[in-house]
Amino acid sequence: MSSSSSVLFTLIIFYVLFCNSKAVMQLPPNESIPAVIAFGDSIVDTGNNNYLKTLGKCNFPPYGQDFKGKVPTGRFGNGKVPSDLIAEELEIKELLPAYLDPLLQPQDLITGVCFASGGSGYDPLTAKLASVLSMSDQLEMFKEYKAKLQGIVGEERTNFILSKSLFLVVSGSDDIANTYFLSHARELEYDIPSYTDLMLDQATTFFKEIYEQGARRIGVLSAPPIGCLPSQRTLAGGILRQCSEKYNQAAELFNIKLTATLDSLNRNLPNSKMVYLDVYSPLLDLIENPKKYGFEIANKGCCGTGIIEVSILCNPASATCTDASSYIFWDSYHPTEAAYRTLIPIVLQNFSSFF
Image (cartoon, rainbow, N blue to C red; front, side, top):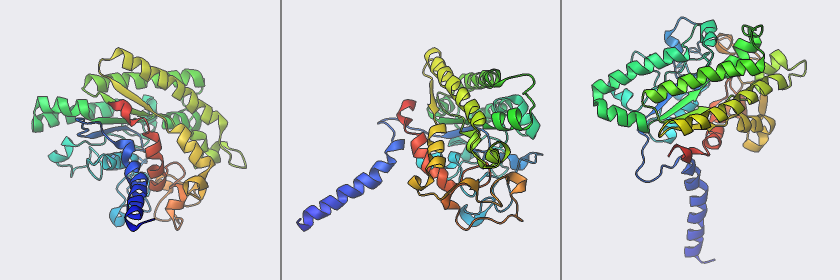
């Protein structure tokens, strides 16, 4: 092979390996995503719970140990969370700020903020049990945000920003894991089919409300394989800590109903692009085949024993693993930044559906 053709071959390989890896989030010509706006629970909360009277906090070490400056910011993980990573991937900004952060600047509002609150869910009882922001609290904050944005850029520009922004909604796992199974707060009243209906009714109301406020591109994450999260294995997986099929089946049932609902809303709401983002299958594959993705440990978190610690149970007294990037889970409930970075390109495979 001549030196010029070998250089060309190297360039082609480089292009295939590196340029194509960005293709998952490529925008069509003449399209923009000016902001990312996140609602939901601890998977996307970037620090709102720091400012609430709740036990559902993580603004202390070892949380944030792999974050820039090793700062515990109130993100439920060792580093960045999906709301940050998606904003970063879209080249909007490196971090998505929490709306309740007192240091939030007016300029930050233009490119999006996070309203999510760790421990929240579609079921209003879920947030109440955890003393955190319900989805309707988050909606009220969004309305306040919209008024502030109008004050900064005017009504016309605000409407444009909202219609083109990517809205992320990540909720439902705390409803199933905490409200239904752990606290038994709904078990007497509802069986799993009727409880997932209650979740879906609340979710549908929320999607319609943010649509009415101007949201059009709405990415809705599925419920994860809850029964395979380390804490849920400990609580419901028997002596061998296997995945709880019962918990996973509840998540799957909700997901089937959620897909159908989003399809129906898209048919009935003009210009609506509500996209179902499946995290169930890729996360389950990651947990079942960790080595395929470069991970070692799938059944426990990096913090403490890894089988029960989460939030205040994962604290400065907890020992941590030496390399969080070899673990799928940081604590007993939340994935590591490395796991999120592996999952996001797979979860966003149907990114083109937003256009």
